[in-house]
Image 1: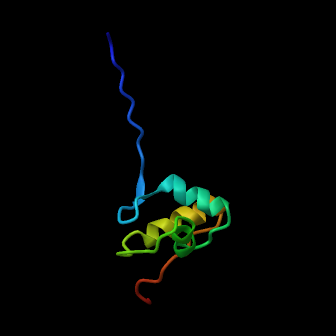
Image 2: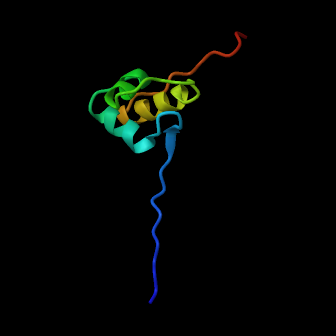
Image 3: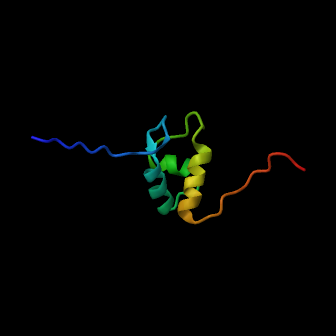
Amino acid sequence: MVRIIVYMHRMFVCICNRITESEVRKAARCGAKTPDAVYACHGCEVQCGCCVDYAQEVIDEERGVRSRLRLVKAA
């Protein structure tokens, strides 16, 4: 007997709340414009905050919004 095991690869955006990239994208398609709104859709809040920038990038990408560039140092 041959057993084939298929593992589903999930990209976690938020480890603290176990929110995946696909869940962030789905929330963005449903109207969430910010990470706080995405987390609220899942009944939780931002914990450590390390994921917020990436979550916003995913939201912007899904909504077709151009990512905002941050000015690091004025020239």
